[in-house]
Length: 557
Image (tube, rainbow, N blue to C red; front, side, top):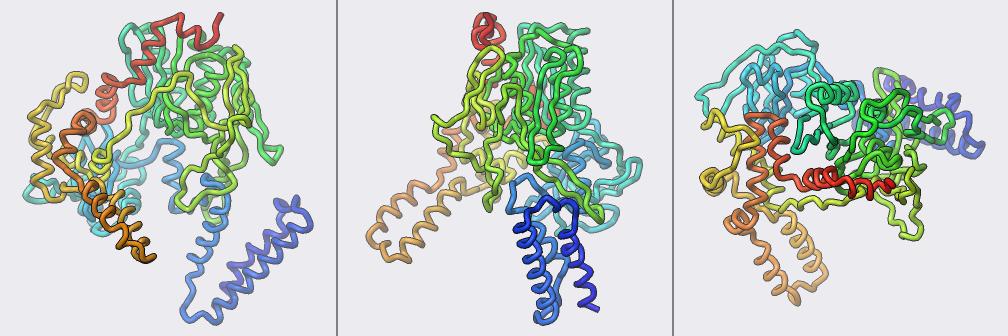
């Protein structure tokens, strides 16, 4: 019976040799495929017959799929039936749930974020609360993925949540009604100084274009603006049609926006604007950074290539490939890279090698000699470079985050203090007026020094590298010769917490203030706070206020 079940598993593998999808294989390729499928089939049969333990066929086949896809690019992905809801949320920004996200902290499940006016926050659940059970099911030792799926469900269904807070003597139980959750990708919009509009878009999810359209119409009717800053920093992309629809709002009708090219001729497509623009002449600046990818690069690249606006920030990520989703048997899906994007000048924004990905799933960029870089030209004959993402017209280097700040973020130091601060302080002044005064910072320093969990090793990465090198040197017999150098280096790497807290005070204050503000005013409050001291936005405002400079950059005669 085991052998029969194994044959049933293998049949689909043998069947693909007869599939129409493989009819384009050469005779040699067809032979190689048939050969290795035959070997694989025989291998599994031998394993099933002679291996000392019972085989977990499901895991073997899943790992085989994963191993196959790892030979391709980092965006090709197998989506199991269990993960289909997560994938749907990534593309649509919608799900049924209570509007809260969770993290693991000290082996406990805690609420890491709640969304404004959503069931969780309306029920009184706040970040920092520890979840004990969901619908009377203990979640001790469960993963965040498992807990998230328990919190999600059909809108209008109830969920019984048992949770506790650090200042409570005993846990609390509450019933929360799930609802249809949609995270608005327009995280903030408003008027900056001198009648300059500002829109921050976090993703290109379903109805993003409609959200942007509503804001532009709002500005026209209620607060006419003289220029616009469109912020897509840290926007990793999303639905391309939403991006193209947004470009319709700024570019003339029948303007080329995008070309998609792939190996299969069926994926070849061209996209043009189809409507009259809402704002055809409004001076425009697009803000980007290294985390602006895919649809963000199409939008900023099309604006740059058509000389419709100025790009300000840092070089973008460089993801110029198209992923298509195909349905597979048993409710599974395949997200497959099928083509590349080409923006109006004819350049491809792809700067990542699609042929493979490394073991750590890190970005792999081409090391192309400058003389081989392909140069293209915008509508106003400005030179732009292909194959390296989108290089801004004005480059603003982002502030480097000190190691101490990085470790405070990853170890929940800021988060823990902000949660405790809100428990002891029921309200704070508005984000635009909030100042983190000396007494608050002194309290934070005391919080770190007195709580043993906060005495972090802020140099732990560098120490690990040094220890690794020391072990290698010892194994090769050279340590006695360089032991003094190692001891001196280790002494210098010993973290001085008190020194770091004073030396990096300004950077620490910014991050701490944003965590405190988020406890009261959610993500919108954080954006309002950052707007006050944002060098990239300040530069955008400066350019928009200088018509001569704006026209010079765009080569407008």
